[in-house]
Structure formats: structure tokens, C-alpha cells
Image (cartoon, rainbow over all chains, first blue to last red):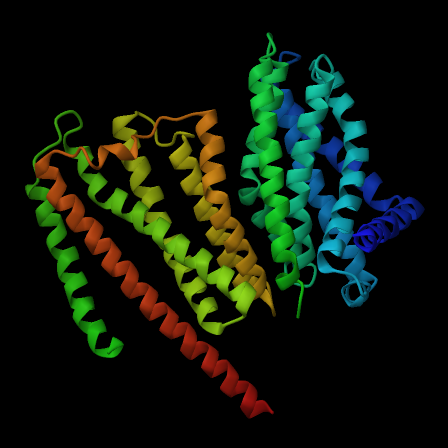
Amino acid sequence: MKEFVRAVWLVTRKDLLVETRTREIFLTTVFFALACVLVFAFGFVREGRPVQDAAAGILWIAIAFSGTLALGRAFERERHGETLRALLLAPIDRPALYLGKLLGILILLTAVEILVVPLVALLFQAPLFTHALLMVGLLAAGTVGFAAVGTLFAAMLARARSRDVMLPILLYPITVPVIIAGVRGTAALLAPEADLPMARAWLSMLVFFDVVFVTVSLWTFEPVMTE
Amino acid sequence: MQKKLFPVLAIVAAAMFFYAPFMILAAPYESTMGLVQKIFYFHVPAGMTLFLAAFVSGIGSAAFLFTRKPWADRLAVAGAELAVVLGLIVLVTGPLWARKAWGVWWIWDSRVTSTLVMWLTFTSYLLLRRYGGPGSDRLSAAVALFGMVNVPFVYWSVNVWRTLHPKTTVVPTLPSGLRGPFWFCVLAFTLISVLLLMVRTELEKRRQELDELYLAVEE
């Protein structure tokens, strides 16, 4: 068990170390998320004010789109440096490798969200911080669910042809439950009179999806990543 | 056995699909919806066999992922292709009915949305297989497995969001005149689905054999 946790941490630490040296994925992802928000603003702002529920939708679309980009880049880097094979040859359990990669991506996406979420709140006059604890819970649970499936698919697509376009094609239909729960939960919080029981219900659904998605991903990672 | 049985079943299926329109025509009109209700005789059986095909593909994919048996992969491909075709039938006939019954072509209801998501999942399965390059059979198996596991969750989450589609409970409460043609169509769709699954797995088997022969010749 101790060995397992150590292996997970080593994989995560390696990713974070590479990232802190170049900051490539972090910076490109943040600005990609910003570009998304900008494009959506033209669609969903009327007479200077955003239409109802627009902020919740824009926030989650920005997270999903930039998350896809970050996932693709994280494994593109491994493939480009020809380190993916080395990772697979390393004497560690496949689930440890998966969890290590997932943790690295989660830390990266959290950093992106710390910048993007307040910005959405500011630009769309969305009271995202009145129920800060629930909002953080929704964001965390939603990101885990999205990244859990995303890490598995990005890893297995790393050596496939047309991987750039295949990742969103595969990922979005599968993560529909996470997106719905994230958007509706956030919209319930942002409504003129915040619907707290509804937001809590969506949050508990998200946690349930997380458990299912992480379990199935852990289960399939080994046969998918073994030659 | 399979070779002898197949043409017989194929003829039976063809005859059933030829006879089905006459049976549907003869069935009494449904009291509130009238003529548009008749699309239901093809829409619902196609939906039922869609779930059957998706289930076959998911089970085949899971078996292939964990055992690496070629037969499981063949079954998974056949199921996925069938699911895409049947899904297309469901997604075309549904809006045709909805336009008359609800006044709009499309509604983001739980059944409608989960059918669309399932159809997209199996379409992406086929896309990955075709354009994914070497090793994509294993990768697509993971997609089908996820797609199958996901169905209840998509359904559940959209259900909390909104519901409008007629419940499946309409089926056991059908008036007697509508029941006959309905179950006849269900049988016809099930038969054609099983036949298509058989043909497609056989075709995939021969394709794999041909691939191996090419490789052997090159060596």
C-alpha cells in the first residue's frame, strides 16, 4: 500500500515538475478557457446582461473544453518525448500510473479553475461565492468525474491516429451525466433565490458518478494499456 | 446448422417485414393521436432492439478487453454497427412523431437524450475503429464498455433534469387491436437484428482471417 501511494506520487511529481519548468499546459489552457468565455459572451449576453443560467453553462463549457485540451497536451508531451513507453515499462502497477496521471491533471485543472471561476463570476455578475462551499464541492466533484474518464481516454488515445479529434468525440457523450449535474447544480446556486437542496442533490449525484467513473477507469486502464 | 438455418430465417424476416405494413394498416386507429400513432410500431421495436444491440456490443467489448478472444471483438463490432443503424431509425422516426404529437421536432427529454447519447457513443466507437489506426480494437472496446455502463446514468441525470416522453408503461396497457401488430413488429425487428448480428460477426471473422493470410504471405 505504501509502495502504491509512493508510485502514484512519483508519477504526479514528475508531471508537476515538468509543468512548473515550462508552464506550457497551464498557460495555454488558461488562455484557451478565456477565449471560450469570450466567444460565449457574444452569444449569451443581451443588452449588457447575461441571459439566465448562462454563467453556469459558460463556466462548465469552459472547464470541459479547456480540460480536453489539457488532457490531450499532457499525453502529447509523453508521446513527443517518447517517455510513454518508459512509463509503461516502469515497475509500478498500472492503477498507480493511472492515479498518478489523474492527480497531476486534477492539480493542473484546479489551478486553471482558480483563475477562470472568479473571472466568470466577475464578467457575468454571477454570485458564485455566496455559497462558496457548495460551489467548491460541485467544481471539485465535477472536475474529478470529467478528468477520471478523460485521463483514461487520453492515455489510450496517445498512440492512436487522429487522437486530437477523437478525444472530445469520445469524451463528451460519456461525460454527459457529469456535465448535466455540474451545470444544473451551479444554475441552482446562481438562481435569484438559491435552491440549496437541489444543488446538494446534484452534488451527491456527482460524487456517485465520480465513484463509478474512477472505478471503471481503474478497472479498464490495465487491459487497455497493455500490449 | 447455422448455414442451413440462416436462409430460412432470412426469408421469414423478409416476409414479416413485407406483411408488417398491412398489419399496421389494418390495426384500429388510436383514439387520441389517430394516424401518427402508427409510427410507434416501428419506433418502439427499433428502440428495444437498439438496447439489445448495445448490450451485445458492451458485453462483447468487456469480454474482449479481459480475455482477448477474437470472437468477443467480432460480436462487439457487429453489435455496435447494428446499434448505430437502429439508433438512426429511432432518432428519425421519433421526431416525425414528436412534430405531430408535441408540436416540435425535438425535446430534451430523458429517453430522447439518452438515446442520442448512446447513439453518439456507438458512432464514436465505429469512428475510433476506422480512424484510430493499429490497436484501436482494444481502445474502442473500452469506449463500448463505458457506453454501456453509462446508459443508466445518462438516463437518470436527464430524468432529474426533465421528462416528457411517454412512459414504457404504455406497452402493457395497449388496447387489444394495437397489441397484435406491435408484438409482430417487435418479433420482426428482433429477428432481423439477430440475423444481422450473425452475418456481421461471420463477415468480421472472414476479414480477420484474410488479414492474417495477407500477413502470412508477406512474411
